[in-house]
Length: 141
Image 1 (cartoon, rainbow, N blue to C red):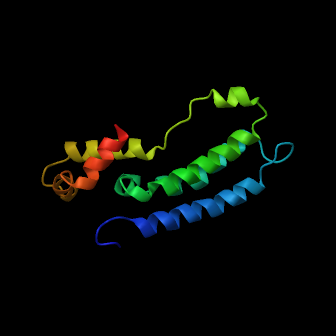
Image 2: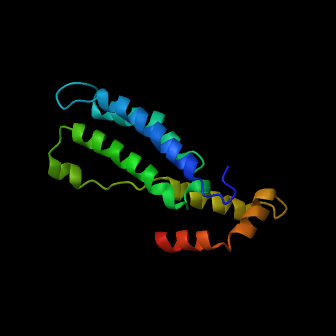
């Protein structure tokens, strides 16, 4: 583990692992043959997305998280391009943001509601004044 808690190696390893699985998913798709778009989406949600979201509240403020976002973006392109709907219909859909932000908010709310003697609450209280957290909160606002 990185003593400065940057999680760079972990993020690169996880993103590469997701991209390898994504390449297998891409092979199963085709515009005129292959799995249906809903099946591909379900496969993504059950196989690849858990990799991208595991421990997201911990590594999410990292500057390297764009690698995870690019893996998610590639998956959405595979799923959307396979859809038989016209491009205008596909582009008008709301694109869901990475659920790691929601997981981070839920995690911090749980920490705030926990007993003050709990170790994760103590760690959070020490960490919440850090510069990295302030930069992250400013970037998401």
